[in-house]
Image 1 (cartoon, rainbow, N blue to C red):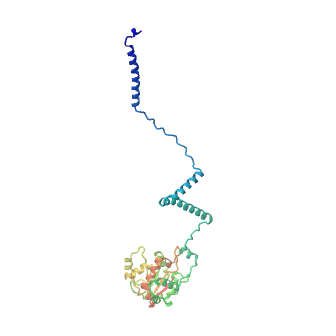
Image 2: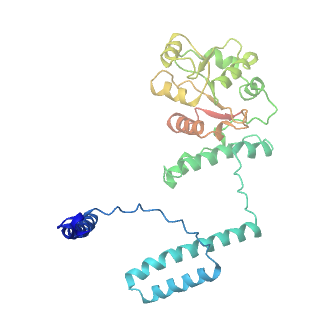
Length: 315
C-alpha cells in the first residue's frame, strides 16, 4: 500500500486537510466583510383608534385642571381663556334660546307719513291764524322777539279766505268785486295787479285755465321755471301790460331780484293754500316750497302788507 501511494502520501493528506480549513476561514472573512442587506421598513399596521369614553374625558379634564393649578401664571392664563370663552358662548346661546321661546320679537312701528296723516284727517280751510303760526315758527330762530312782533300781520292785511265752496273765478270775484275798473286803470309794464302763488307748474296751468270767467280782457302770464327761461319771462313782462301773474314762489322771487318783475302795482296776493296733490299734501306741507314762500313774504310782501298796499288771500 505504501509503495502504491508513494512516499509522499501523507503530505498530500496534510495539505488537503489544511487547505480545506484555510478555505473555510477565507470564506468566513469574506462573509464578514460583505455588507449586510437591511430589511425594508415595512409599515406597521395602523392601530385602531379607540373612541374616548366618558371616563377618559373626565380624567383628561382633571389632568388639565391640575396642570392649570400648578402651572406658572403666564401658562395659566393661556389655558384659562379658551375655557371662559367657551362658557360665555354657551351661556349666550342658552339665553338666546330662552328669549326666542319666551317672548317673540316686537315689531317696530312705522312712522306715519304726511300723506297718512292728511288722508285720515278731514280737510279744513285755511285761515289767517294758520299763516301767522307758520311765520312765527319760521322767524323764531332768525329774529328777536321784538322783531317778530313787528312782523305780525293784522287782520286788516287779510282777505276773506276760501271755505272750500268757491272755484278760483268765484273766489276772485268775491274778493275783487271792482276788477273791471282796476283792470282798466293798470297801465304799468313789468308789474301785475294780482299775483297767485302755487306749488308747481302744472298747478299754475290749471289755475290759468280757471281764470277765463274772471279775467275778461286782462292778460295773464306764467311765472314758473319749467320749459321757460327767465330771460324770456323778463322780455315778456317788458313788452306790454300784464294784469295777472301765476307761478311758483322760487321763480317769482328770482324775477323780483333781477328787476324783471315790479310790485309797485300789486294789490292782491293769493296763496293756493287748500289744494292737495296726489299725496294729499298742501303747498305748505312740502318743505322746499314752504321755504320759498317764506323767503318771498319776508323779502317783498310783508312790508307792503303792513303799509296797507297789499292784501293776502288764502284760496
